[in-house]
Each structure stands twice: as C-alpha cells, then as structure tokens.
Length: 303
Image 1 (spheres, one colour):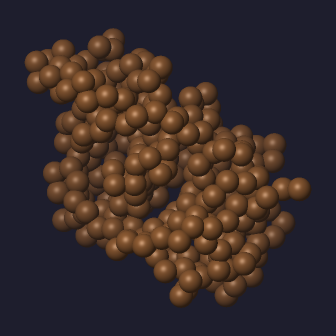
Image 2 (spheres, rainbow, N blue to C red; image 1 turned 90 degrees about the vertical axis):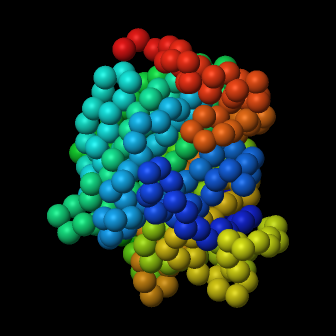
C-alpha cells in the first residue's frame, strides 16, 4: 500500500539581502543544513521595486554546486568565465553546474512595469562530482512540457516525469525532480515520489493543504521562521513544506487555487563545508578554493 508523505516541517521564508544589495526572501539556507540534503538553499527574488533588485549579483565564483534559476517575470542577464552570455526570460530555466569552478554574474532587469520574479535553488554535488567540468543548460520556456489534467491541475515539468511526459533537464547526479504545479479551487492532486528522496513544496500563489489530515505534523518544530500549521492548516504564499518519507505527495484546495514548486532529490549524505558561493566537503578544500580564487588559478575549465 502506498504511503502518502506527511508534513515534517513548515518554514516561512525570511527576508535577506544578497549580491550587491538584492532584497529577497530565503526559504531555507545555511542554518538548515543538512535538513534539505541534497539541496542547500532556495531564494525567492520576486519584487515590484527595481531598487530592490537592480544592483544584482556582479561577478562571483562558484564551485562544488549547481544553481537552478527559474524566472517568472522580468528577465535576468548573465555572463560567465566560459564565455557564455544571455538572458533568462519569463518561463525559462538556467541549470548551471559549477563543478570545478566558474565565475559569473546575474543581473535582474525586471519587466516594463518594474516587476521581477523568480527563484534560485542551490543543489549540492557529491565529492565524486565536485570537480567535474562546468556546464550550462539554458532551457527556454517553450522547451518545458506543460500538461493539464482532467481536474484542471496544470503542471510544468522542468525536471522529472509526470505520466509519460519528461522534463528537458536530465542526467543530473542527484536524480532531481522540479515541477511547477497549479491546483484549481476545490481540487486534489497526488504525485508519486521516490522512497528515500528529500521532497519539498514551496507555495508561490494562493493557499492549500498538503496533507489530508489537515493537522499533519510528524515532527514538532519551533523557531522564528517555522509556521504554526496547528493554528492554520492552510499553507500560503512564501511558505515551504518539507515532507517525511513515503510514496507520494498530495495537495488539496478549498475556495481558492494554489500554485507551488515541487522539488525532490536523492540525499548525498556527505559532510558540507560551505562559505559564501563555494561548497565543498572539508574546510581544507574550502580554503584551497578561496586561495585559488585570490591567486588566479581558480578556473580549470576550458574557456
């Protein structure tokens, strides 16, 4: 019999400032390691104030991770040490594997009304792949399969599989899934998940339930950014659900729709040494990476 995953933790995203002065909300990050293994961080950079995002993320290094950028509104201009440059536009995804090291910049520009919206997810790489050749996967919106089910649920498949449709991002070492789900009012949706994988949902519009019991904690939590679901079982915009183990997840709505990102991946289970934009396994590896960045030997890939 399939086991539906219950909610383990619920976190409310918190405001923070990154880059050269970008105001964003962080769903989880350094303080939650290794809770979301293999994922390290999820940032929500939606804003309608250009002063909060135009300073962007000027040239900076990455090593040992993958960064996944999903844009809903506006655009993000980017360039890197491999000679790539381009623009991430609404509906596009950029899946960057930093591997042995890359230096790049990301500059949000917003749309004609000054609206900027998107998310960046960091995924860890295992020790066996931390020094792999860097690569980009620039996925245009038109390349991302979309489907609508009989009950009106709409799904964009960035990575992973729904029914017979598979997303364009494949062959990723942590075996991830990344879906954009919209559930209409008065509906229910269930989706199979792999046992042992970390599974999370981040709500970006509306509100809904993520467990049939509606009082579903399998693990009690405390802390300033933890959401009191026992007082309000609805999960709303800017709130993240981390599920326990099981064979499927579900979402239900009542009088309004809900839209959320469903993300999953296979845990790595290795030590994490993390400072700024570089994530390695040991402090010695971390120190070496920053030494190489300072002395100009950080880049090892072919330009």
